[in-house]
View (cartoon, rainbow, N blue to C red):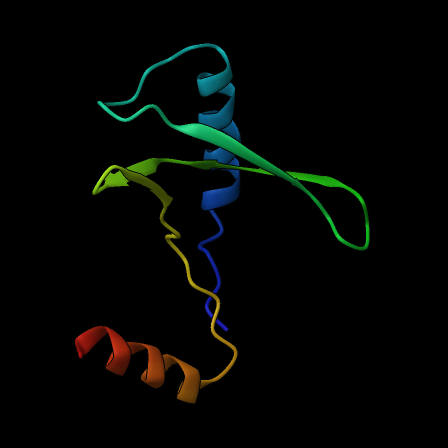
Amino acid sequence: MTRAPRWLKPINKIYMLLLRRGVSFGAEQPLVLTVRGRRSGKSRSTPITPMAVDAKRYAVAVFRVLKTRREAIRILEEEAA
């Protein structure tokens, strides 16, 4: 399983604090995505930068969690096709 580096969580907290205080980062306005945990019910937040492609907005994941090596190979093959 791919894990995010240890430094990412504290940096995200600082980044979200700056976003909430109105600091701008580049042309695209970053957002804070907050979801409630399915089992715990705790709110989890992460900064995202929406991207516009053909007038549709997407949120791009930086770290993809893969369960197996076979799944990683399948995804790479699909992207290459």
